[in-house]
Length: 121
Image (cartoon, rainbow, N blue to C red):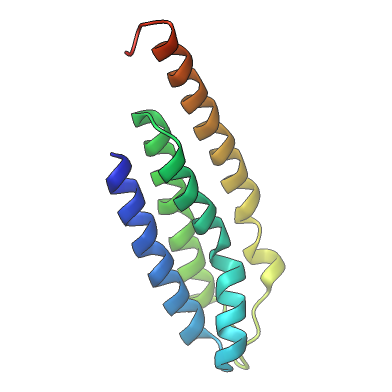
């Protein structure tokens, strides 16, 4: 599960950068904004590598599955005619991502406590 989450999040990062880069008219702006808008996926990628547990990995996978379609929606359907995008509205997803990250950390902490008590299930 850990490897699956890592691979899917990595593919989501590549796809997200491509969508953001092609969605904006100026390549340099697309590249810089792409890294800013994809940064929640980078955090998810690092967390999927560091944290263990099936529940943790499912939560991180859900966060990736939530954020990338939201990003694609904004760039495919909400991009203005001159390439302007309401970045504040796009960042509404970040608080949801933060909640999912905390849930993943709590699940990982619970898993670590169970292993230390001798009950790995």
